[in-house]
Amino acid sequence: MAFNHITVIGGGAWGTALALTCARAGRTVTLWEHDAANAAQLRNKRESLFLPGVRIDDAIALVDDLAAAARAPALLLVVPAQAVRNVAQKLAPLIADRTPVVVCAKGIERGTEKFMSEVIAECAPNAVPAILSGPSFAADVARGMPTAVTLAASDGALAAALARTIGSASFRPYHSTDVRGVEIGGAAKNVLAIAAGVVVGRRLGASAAAALTTRGFAELVRFGKAYGAKAETMTGLSGLGDLLLTCSSPQSRNFTFGVDLGRGERPEAIHAGLAEGVFTAPVLVDMARKRGVDMPISSAVAALLAGAMSVDEAIESLLARPLKAEG
Image 1 (cartoon, rainbow, N blue to C red):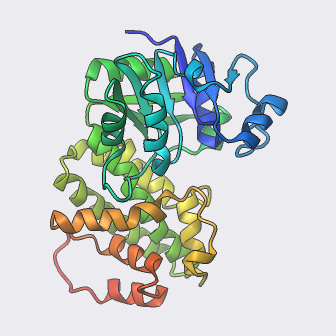
Image 2 (cartoon, helix red, strand yellow):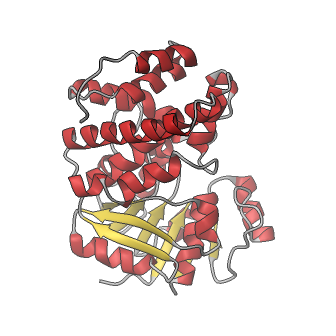
């Protein structure tokens, strides 16, 4: 199983970085961007508006026609989680049967509470869903800095083939069949990163930040177990690895959003951009409640975003929780 031609759907920072990665791996790469202004920037300057200073390799073909883009034997779908349904519906009549569609977004769909692989299966039943997630920042990947991620598909042979296709000396995808676990890690860590940012914005100290991340990981594991994730996925790159990165760096949009919250800014006044945790938090908490999963940190984040709690009230609610055995 070989995929020598890859199309990247989405020319934002992450899409641009992955297109460059695939080109470094020696693949034929096509890049399609829906935003007219960014598409023009890509054509005229070979640079994405969302990743300034990083030039797009001349070998990467830029196309305006989605049908032409969809002819590749494998696609990387690099759009925000809440846009996956819309793009998948457009791709469905254009792709060949059994085309792998690798979703590179981290989130859960609002309204339906569906994971990204479920959205693909529903909207493009002729596609084979796969997920790419893990501790990675677009700027690092685009510049060829060492990065390791997880690529999951229900078919282990397909997951391995896709990993070989996009892997290079500086970009190492480990393959997995635990699609759900990889999806959960990517979605939940964004919510927890907002909480970590609040701790920093409130200047609560490094000890509090370490405690928050550790207890947040416990929440992620409980949620993952309730929804069928494998334990080793939760402790791997797409679980613990991504959580550690996102909870500790201002390069993370979710962390930065939390810092602004901690400094006293109102949620509606902060430019969320692609802080996927803002959209995922209420969905994650509702799904946790339905399975009886205790997620106090995520619940506090959801309450903050809804304006139901102030930052100080959220912190107090966590500190006032009953003392109990760790677990």
